[in-house]
Image (cartoon, rainbow, N blue to C red):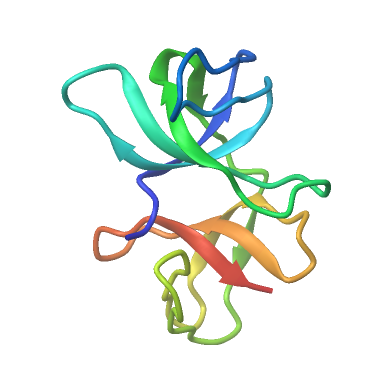
Length: 122
């Protein structure tokens, strides 16, 4: 599936109905689907250290903005994704880093074959 983009919440949002996602200003969101019919996007919120799961739900698209990379990295080896949330990339690929707080995974962007966003193993 892959992500359609990495976004950051610019405002707090408390769900008004079932299926909506709570978010706090600064939360990192992986957008899964962008609705063409309304202003709600399906997103997965990056889990904090206190969370076991990464919650998924709808967010108002005017409460988020595209996240800016916090750094860059270059792959040492080729990697073939193992799940839909991972990203395949060649050796020596230039990667945009969005989050490196997890000791096992780094959230990166790499534009290739229509799947520009995913997680890469650290």
